[in-house]
Length: 231
Image (cartoon, rainbow, N blue to C red; front, side):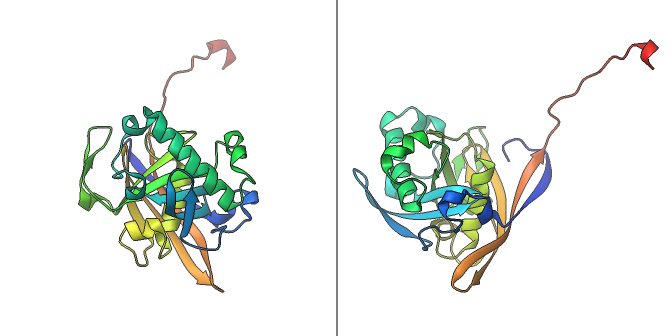
């Protein structure tokens, strides 16, 4: 966790329904757990485009020239990198049915999100904490509103947990593949455990529940003085 404290487990029921209606309501808008996404200036990339928690496009870190251990400074200060991610996001948004043309992406900055994944490896988080390869199942970095997020957005964490539970997605493969109900991923600020319960129904993947741990911290405390004559 970014800020260690008492763990509170949150459950998201039918997380695919929490995505936006214009994604068609389908967990995988394209019908596939992995697609080939042709992006001008970038090339043909494998991508998992999922509508769970929030519409998210996952790509492999290596395919776009990254390791998966990057912190904010490695990307947010690089205009060319930011432009590349926006181009990728725009073309993915069209493929997901969220927009009709890439020119509309500029007016739709909040979704879809772009994230890149890599197998587990040791790295040092922005907090200075050493994250060991054995501490995590997968590394994930996510873009939000045109910048690399300092940790991980809650809705994107739901997408990670859901994708990890479904065999064959890029998140699942980066985490080692196979069936699983939970995954601990490394993000720029630390680690987070998420999970999901998935099943195959009539050829379509359904996730009934996504689970995420958050920390319960004291944010504020103070005193209120009440005049004695009001008691």
